[in-house]
Image (tube, rainbow over all chains, first blue to last red; front, side):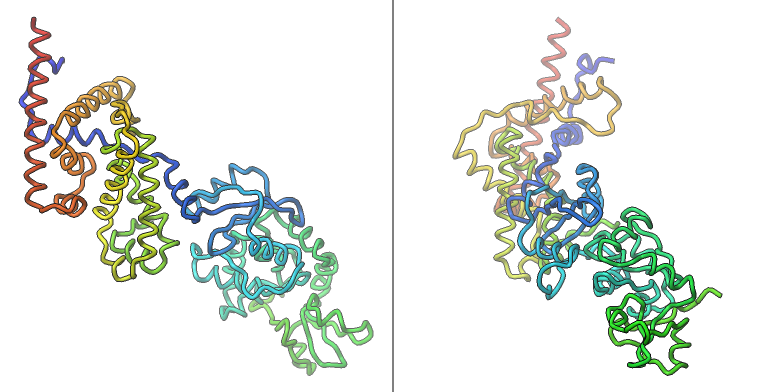
Length: 275
Length: 193
């Protein structure tokens, strides 16, 4: 069929269809260029990390995504998938971001008033879990059950684990410092249990001791001079001299023996303890 | 994820401009680029114009009180910024318009090379016919039928009465129809002889 041999009288619909075919999509680079011009584009840097280099992305709200640095293209795609906007690689992060990385990843530098993080894309529960996890000091660990109790959801232990497993900001938000109550190291999104152990060792924690104590039934350490009991990695525990240390099996046992909970590490029993 | 409504976008722009601005660009970049392309004629200049238009828009939004942002009609507002920016660009630098830029583009979900070629032929013809319209009708017709703005939105973007926009679009479409018919007759008589 050759439409040229069959001249038709055009109607308005034909005209509007024809004109509609002139529509063109904006070039794919327009969004990134615009955000760049007005200083809203997100950026990322490569920095050293405890178990190899890290990519750290940040925007105006703070750090938004951290991964172990393997493939830059994968990281940029992961960022786009998460936030729906582009990210650009830069040589150096702004001073505030550098200070945050220095403090959170290496424990160096002065106290930060607030850790700037972009968590808006996460559910409220995940944000609470991550904010709480930020409070765990370097070189110490807390059980999942502790995070659950601290955010007022003592039974949501498994949900805490899931939220930490999808932590978009590992190393900065120290999900590696949250372990199982039974002493097992637990899962780790940034490279599995071995990576988790390595990050904790890099912070000066003896992970074999960490795993041995609960295996021997010891969950808490008390001091017979102060009458206070703590998590084994609490810095207050380290000040107890060997002959005043009391091994405790549970918070119930501790209380019955007349100990009170440390106000710094606030130890709790797991809600359903395995027999 | 639900597609946010226009009002919702204004609301978000009013409460947190920096967080919502990327969504404004994503939602309206085709319109801004399209309007720019209609005026400046080539894709590279249109991209510059669109970029500049969004930057200006952002700066304007930073100055506006939040009540004003909440009540903005984004499409005509952005179309107007794009038009002004495109006209500035034209004045600064008279560009030759390249017909290819106006027409050749990949058509998503198309059947194959044959139909893409056919469509591009068709698009090229419509671009030529549109270009042949008197200036007074051309922009109004393009905004209505290429970019899909409503009459009210075009009136607002061009700051002209609704009635005169409607009549310009109708006159323009009538002229296009006549030009199309004339072209088809010319082709037919050529092939017949």
